[in-house]
Amino acid sequence: MDNDFQRSVSLRASRRPDRINLSYQKGGGGNSAPDFSMKIIWKKGFIRLVLVAGIIWMLLILSALLFHIWSCQSSLAFFSAFCNKDSKVFDKLYTMGLVRPPHRCPIPVADDPNTVVIPKRGSPERFVQSLSYIMEDDMASHRSESPPLFGGHQTWKQRDKSFKVKPTMKVHCGFMKNGGAEMDPKDIEYSKKCRFVVASGIFDGYDLPYQPSNISQRSRKLFCFLMVVDEESYKFIKGNVTVRKDEAGGQWVGIWRLVLLKHPPYDEPRRNGKVPKILTHRLFPHAQYSIWIDGKMELIVDPLLILERYLWRGKHTFAIAQHKHHRSVYEEADANKRRKRYARPLIDLHMRIYRYEGMEPWNPKKGTLSDVPEGAVIIREHTAMNNLFSCLWFNEVNLLTPRDQLSFGYVVYRLGGLFKFFMFPNCEYNSIFILHPHIREHSSPIEWVKTLEEFEKDPSLKETRGGLGLWNPYPGNLDLVVLPPVARTSKAG
Image 1 (spheres, one colour):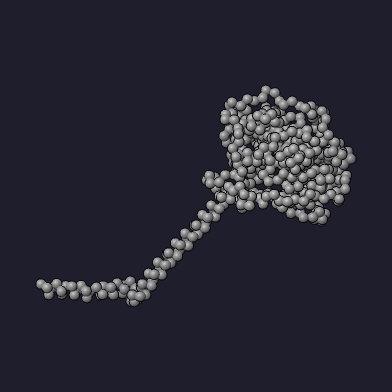
Image 2 (image 1 turned 90 degrees about the vertical axis):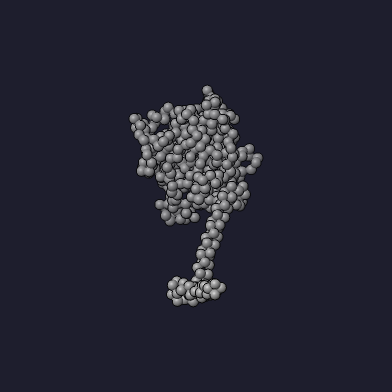
């Protein structure tokens, strides 16, 4: 019995190495045991290396994403400068609710649009009781070779006279005869019923209309939502979104009625966009109140609440936001040059004219929060004084550069405190809308010009219908003008 047990044990012991050797022979084709062990070690090591590298890569991406989110929320200018608010990454993060637009704060609006009391009467006219517009160019007989211009051939003398406020005034205000920007008769007829207007505009096919949200039924009935487009944008919109046609021939994209401006008045699309933005009262003369928002914005606050907050509550008639970074027009001009928003020598010439005419850099003694607004949202009652201001503001854009933020504070200065407006905090401005990136970016050769000599060598760079004041002799010696020194107050500005 004991012998049988010992024999079975010895047989199992003797067979075990044979099995091991057999397994090596089957799997390794005759390789030795150490070689097989090394293969297993290498295979496991490679898998671990790939896993570790993948984890490190994911941690780097997560760290970069977290830094992007943190920098976009940071109140420190140095870190906020790292955040590209126009990037697709930021847009995606905002859609996911991971970031919020910079400097956003709650707007102290009323709780319910249905409880807002609309004033029965317009604001009293104090300084200007009657305002009319020059429609025929007085200089046309002396410049028969010159084509009709939308802004007219305003002289420096006429410009200076327009700033002297009187009870009855007649000024240049665009829409000169045969100057372009004609509206379709059906849109003119439709706009006659519009007392409350939300206006926007798309030019040169940069954007598509974004539908407003949080709009009450009362505001839907009260407001006309008018999207002004040029012919190129009209074709682009029709090719990319559904355009509905009503029985009267009006064309709609959601809540927006498309208003086509035929024959754009300027070569520069950015200058064309100033027509509906600044001259809203000229396009829609029956409107009593208007809210302008740029075309790449999605309105997210009920317009009736906006009028109550920014006009009626404080008895204001014109409201615009303070610029996030700049208070002086000379700071804003410097930023425009750095970002190539227009020809640098022409921006300098624009600023030398303002400096020659006494425009000081902003300081607290001026009595305004800033000389530079965020012009993408404008809230106004169409009083005679506000209409005059808009005309004079537009004339500067027509005569000099299309950068309207450079001209706003200057017109306020020239009116000598007669024009009253409410400049509200920038953080509230960022709470009125969602900002979408342009579908495509605008660029024109004039933005890259560095010297006036380049214009002389290549006349095709000049605009033929706008900014002509920069090419007509100025009645003062600008060679002696020294622009104020500019210190950047923000790395992001």
